[in-house]
Each structure stands twice: as C-alpha cells, then as structure tokens.
Length: 99
Image (cartoon, rainbow, N blue to C red; front, side, top):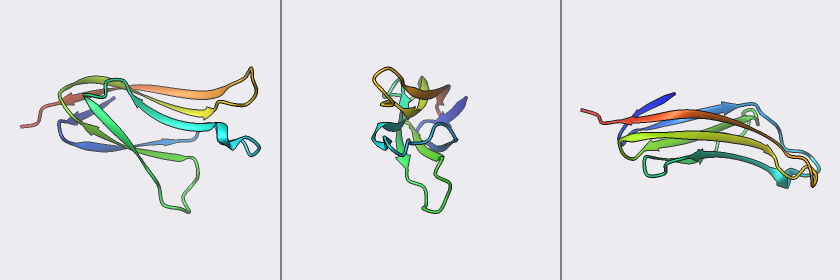
C-alpha cells in the first residue's frame, strides 16, 4: 500500500522478475499501469548505468484525492505464438489531502 498527499510524489522501486531473452529482446516489456489516471500518474526513471539491470524505478505523482490501484507487469510477450511469460504485481494507492 502506498499513501501520498496531493501534489507529492514517491519513487517506487521494483527488483527482479523475468529478464529479456537474448534472441527476442524486442518482446520484453515493463510497465506500471495506474488504473485511475486522474488520481495519479507515473514516469519511468532511468537508473544510472552500472547498477544492476533488474531494477526498475517509477516516480508516482498524486494528482487529486482518491483511490486507485497500480499494476507493475514485466516479461517477455513474444516467446512463441502460444506462450507468454509475464509477471504482474498489483497494489493499492491512496491519495489524501495535506494540511
């Protein structure tokens, strides 16, 4: 669970998960979907080179009071015509007014 005040932001870090396939790296994707984009938005933050290649950082901004959920998905979607390897993690966001 993440709780933010309106107008504030927080960096959220994800670690691990499936890696890009050497022979089909174009099928690799990582996304953070905010279910209610009027309540919050996100931006991918590029981490400094030299760090591990399985760390993913997103900046989440609280836009207005409300609740939403975020879903982080990572994986390889084009393994073959029949198979997909994607992992997802869902968690709630609560935005509150600040004094």
